[in-house]
Amino acid sequence: MNLQVPSVARRAGLALLTLAVMAAGSPYADSAAARPPITGLSHVALYTAHPAASGRFYLHDLGATKGTDFENAAGVRYYFAPTQFVEVLPLPAGWTSLSRLDAVAFTTTNAEAMRRYLDSRGIAVPRRVQRGRDGSQWFDVKDPEGNDIQFVQPPAHPPAMPLNRLSRHIIHAGFIIHDRALEDTFYRGVLGFRPYWYGGMTDGNPTWFSRQVPNGTDWVEYMVVDPPHGRGIPPGMSSSTVGVLDHFSLGVWNMETAYNLLWNGNRLEGQDNLPKIGRDAKWQLNLIDPDGTRAEIMELRPVGKPCCSPFTASHPTY
Image (cartoon, rainbow, N blue to C red; front, side, top):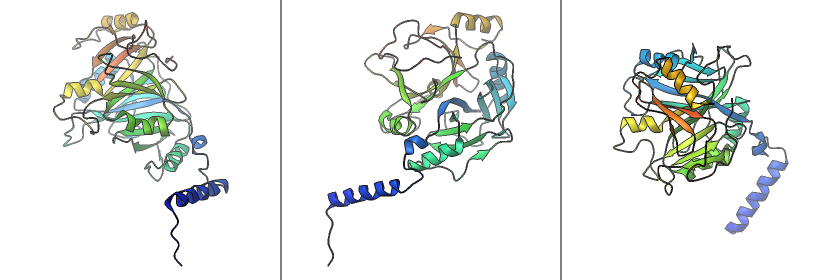
């Protein structure tokens, strides 16, 4: 006799079986507890077609320290802190995208544990982490819209470097997305990021959504564009707009001090923006690198009430 099990009963039975397997000692019985800390931003990887000009921008203008790229021998790292840098890579031959953003990387305390955790949550991961000569470990995944996201375990002994007088903290990175709810399934649902602030050019139409790492104050900023269920760069968007939306931000204590440093050091050649108070009520200054990517200089705290929403998590510090 071939008995048909009703669908509801079948689902209930599968749920009980799953619980039984977990109770029997599945290595991912508590996937939330298996997620290691995500403490902040590690780096942003960008492509350049102008390596000499790019080097001057990051070294002279932004005051970074040049270092070896242990992940890609063709690249250069521009450090703002011992474990935070902008990775600049040569533009690949035949590159047709308007975007110069390659990847956004987050710092974790245990890359292998993070790889296993994401695997347990159904995220496609590589079979093993990669290891650098400096002792760092990392791997890459794709978020729901196909953006390249990397998780990095820093080396036990990061390089020593002089203090950057402009900034020593990359506080956030932003990039183009289309579907906030879809992206939240990954950043909030899987990774545990939390809301920090949202806003936009007008109060009634928020298009910037900040998601803060679960174990620190750095954040990723969704730069939402139409169409709602699209992917990548919308047709007709200019390269300058893409470069403004795909960006990273350096935190500073005081904008007047930062601007005086840039002005008196002749670091503003070719730049035409001035400091202003953004919609989040923080002083900011937008600089553009030689390939069109925005480097946003931002005060760590607001000077008044922001538009659109209150802040709902802690502000960054040095």
